[in-house]
Length: 102
Image 1 (cartoon, rainbow, N blue to C red):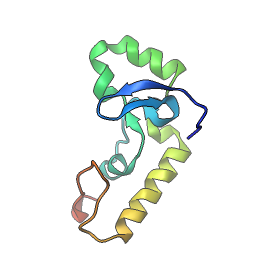
Image 2 (cartoon, helix red, strand yellow):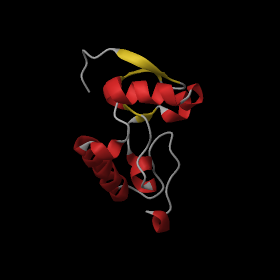
Image 3 (cartoon, rainbow, N blue to C red):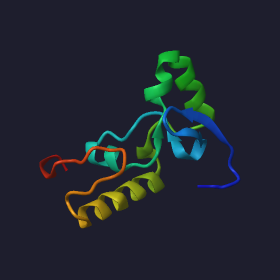
Image 4 (tube, rainbow, N blue to C red):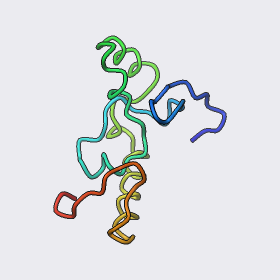
């Protein structure tokens, strides 16, 4: 996270976030999706049509976190950390994932 980067995207329930904290769509893997700390804009902005996705993904944000080694590594680290903690705990704001789905 770059503290000098302007927070320009409104994410309902989270407020404004910077472009480095956003992707258009989530990881394909359910485990990585739950462990990823990036905000998914598709959920909020897809109702405005494909032109919005094209504009955002061309100039502002990554289309998916799979194209970022940093996002992948951070999500994997989060998954490892979650596996180390008490099984009754989980990420704030995200449902826990049953072991058979991991």
